[in-house]
Amino acid sequence: MGRIDAGDLLERARTEFAPDPGANRVVPLVERGEAAPALLRALAAEERAVVAADRRAFLRLAERAAGMPRCAAYYAELARGEEEAALRLDVFARAVDALPDGPDGPDGQGYELRAGCQAYPAFVAWLAINAAPAGTVLALAANFSAWGGYCSRIARGLREHYGLDDAACGFFDLFAEPAPAYEESVLAAVQEWADSGRIDEAAVRRHGRLLRSYEAGFWDALLEG
Figure 1 (tube, helix red, strand yellow):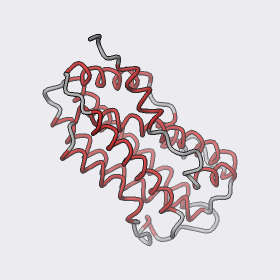
Figure 2 (cartoon, rainbow, N blue to C red):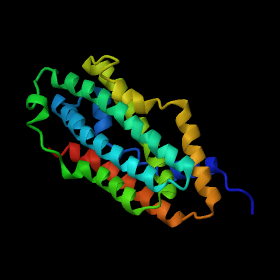
Figure 3 (spheres, one colour):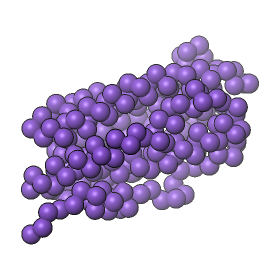
């Protein structure tokens, strides 16, 4: 039996777990400049909680993947990326707080997190505790591809319709244009997992499907407030 190719595994996962084109109703609103400032502030507040939770989950996955160095390095890199994301997200939050109809409360104090938005990071935390770290790489990487596409479209809409500058859009730019080394890192982690001979494709499909559902639920919940 020949060696399983990481690139093929990753491409198939990205295709299988790609979201329905019409599943996200928020991104088109931002693209057209029709998203209310309150919706953008809700996005900032929810993402603050997601970023903080995901960072801790990725650190835990890195610890549990200690026997697979490339996989552990991948998760450690993701955790570092969340630290940078948090800094950029603060700039975005301040920018949308300053939009014409005013902030919901000082420093976001008037906003309550929504269960539908926080279900996604809750499941990522579940994966960090319960799932095989190596196999989880594929499910997460597939989801990140969709997220990156959303971020690219949001950044464009924020610049064109809300007058936000590069600094304010930096959070979305970070994910829309990942560093070239990211693809190398994820491929190395997937290949290490494939070479281990411990592939559980059923678990990968289950985790990928659930992540896609929770991702869609995040955006739906933003419109429920």
